[in-house]
Length: 112
Image (tube, rainbow, N blue to C red; front, side):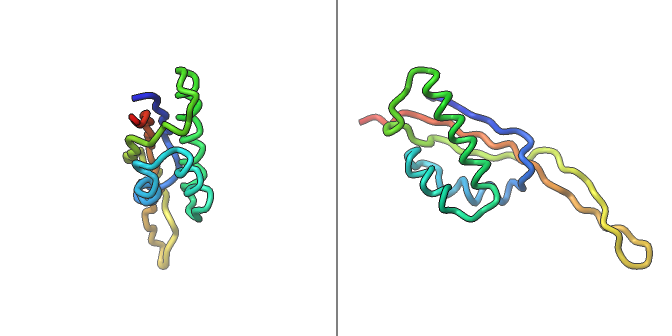
């Protein structure tokens, strides 16, 4: 493991984040940035910012060559849910759960 970045309590559903992480898992960092910039998903900018942080962490540890870095692991786990209510007909209330995610990205150097 060269570097790791974690974003906790992201206000995006884990299902929606997993769709984006499946696209970039195992790719090189430069290709992942290109994919994330062209993707029209709400979680793409959050994951791009997290990936940028992981690259900065790798540079801090002395791995300045980003061409050799690839995404070894990209995981999401469910965070706490905000419970809200929506008013419905005849005085009823329906529960709405606003989901949160914990996103982890681990970078590794590809052996040539």
